[in-house]
Length: 199
Image (cartoon, rainbow, N blue to C red; front, side, top):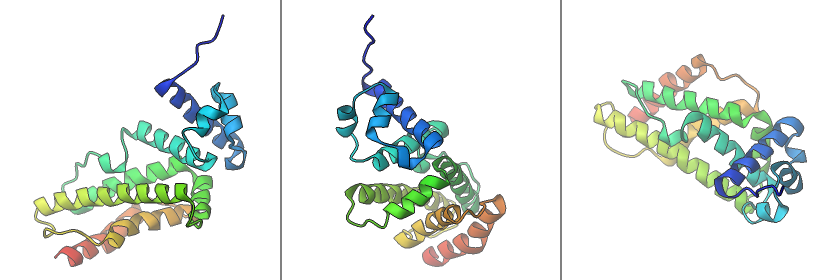
């Protein structure tokens, strides 16, 4: 009996699962299109047509897991806090879950590849992540402005992105991110900084 070839979302799911299995069992160094194709029951050309490199595929597979497990990406979190600090904590708590899924090995790979300024896939990845991070903070600020905690305006881009870069660095340095860490970041730095920037 001939096995039915998987297509569309079913094939994509198989490719992502095969990618994550290789990452978890063998590490990033063993992630090749040939290995993924064999595990997913497809051909290398199918994968080559969609992703430019194993690194890009790894990021896509991990993003898929994060979105699936957390019911959407970071800037789609349903905010339920009663204050600016509450909403920020909710965003960063969710962010740390995503980072845990991302795992330390790939965070290290992130930093290594991000030095390749002329690599188009790295540029695309970094730009996409920064856009999501900034939008998550914009949503938090808009809610704070409606509550009267902040004046109407837009935070500088660097200030929007700073906490995410700092949290990624802590993972890279193998430093724990606890609730106390997040409250320190939010209460002692971000809330005063946002109030200073937006009045």
